[in-house]
Length: 496
Image (cartoon, rainbow, N blue to C red; front, side):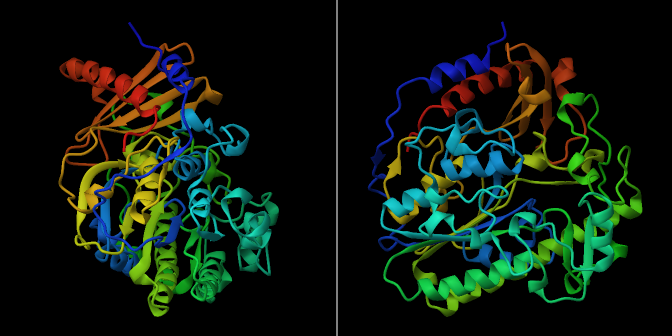
């Protein structure tokens, strides 16, 4: 009999929950100084395709350097592979079925209990000064309660030439003319011989450096969020970052068709990319366009990497590094023609897996990696534990700080993600185990619509949906039971 996951979730969500704080366990594995600073670096649409993730064709020296000074989480997963739900989940410590944010329009303050605090809000309550530059929440969300600056400070998203909420900005006349002719949808990429500050991320880095200098003069610990927009579309970056890559060496995905027997509900029409000029409204992009898109994406990764390097270098120059926790995360993955698909918006491994790097004072495992399964809801309790702060009881994640002491220890059995379809009438509940990704698609009544099973033992890009194979019937049944159990448990409060 099919278990109605949503009914079970509603029952669990309705259970009484205390929103007071509890102190972390006394045997914290780090001896960090009281009230360590936090440099909180967010990167939009960054897939784990970096040098520190074994991709030596990507020029990411600054992120790689940070990885050598911290820990790389090889298997970190967002809770929903699209901007606002993912960032809301990370910032509140709630999964989408608890935050009720599944789209780009819903503001989490309208749907979560008033007692739920965000990460910087909680840090402020513990004596921190919190500021940000760039994109931390989705689009124009400033969320004033999260920041010490009055009203969230609209200037944090405004630059001399353009509002940051309109950050899809071009610098060439040709690109701007194309955007004017296409209701703002200019070309999907741009290169120009301009300084880094010609595009928003260069200005974000400059403002962050200025703020670090100001914060270094005060005794109060700080939480500084720095959110970079690239490599989000359009892939606009100064020419020098394009020049880091030889177009002749760019290869297209070797899995450019959907997995065999994959259900249609698993995919999107990648409308986000189709909104741009030069992209067909239907059908595939040409091979030459695909190579240009991949080239542009990589250029943007290197451009953002350079900005991250500037900010971290300034932290070092100011002598703040020894008492600053640095975390770098991408809000979700991205497809670059894989499965014949582009952008995100699915439950596939390529969309749900994203980079996560953490560096903390007193680390004895700097430069190591862990293959343990971790989730973005784990970031909130982990930062609290690293800083020695109490943990709010609304959190649904588990601190991964013990992994930073012993990266090979037994850890979570699963990582969970989800994605809605048909305006929320169908939900895909997805689960990553050590080897498999299992996804159950069901309607609001709990009736199963489709199932997916992919074997990722050797490859993050699976070639076949095994859920339709009789050979894997027992595996599917076992994982379906596990999914129901794990999802129900995941919506209860943490056990840290």
